[in-house]
Length: 252
Image 1: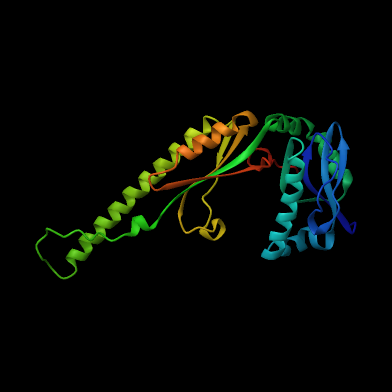
Image 2: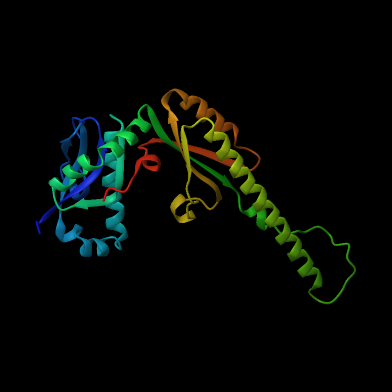
């Protein structure tokens, strides 16, 4: 086995003049075949072969640094030309395998690149304050006194019913927001809500959506997203991003 492997970031149609350093601070280069351009760098197999990579992926600091470098390269390419990102830590034994991939999956890459041309990905998240579901019901009870604890259990059941109703209403609101934004986007995806440790917010994340939007409709999309907030729901828009949600495909 060679001491180095070929790390693949993305596939595009055009060569970008300059890319930032990639994973392991390696220089990024290109492999060109059949009208497609693969952006790659060389990485040490002592860290990126199957077994050591499995251990590396358990190192959160290493994983975070690798992800930042990967996204930095992809974002630089996507800012200049239609781009199909590949999954994080996609490593081949050598350049020849990547060249073969470009030939073998040429039609698939062409279809993906056609889909994203003139479009960018935007992220939309909707949040609600969870404390509104947990506020105790302090309304006076009209029930006659009963056994000890009965009044508490009645209030508890009422609170649970209220929280469940709030939850159903919030989920319906998320469906409405997503459906409305999807009418402006070319394609849309709903991702799982993020853990508060990742989102950095204690609020309940109702929606974690991705939307592929024509460049000419971005203002319309942003305006609609802003109008869908309110009533205890905050809507945030981020982007533009490289179109990860709509282009990443299996490359093996």
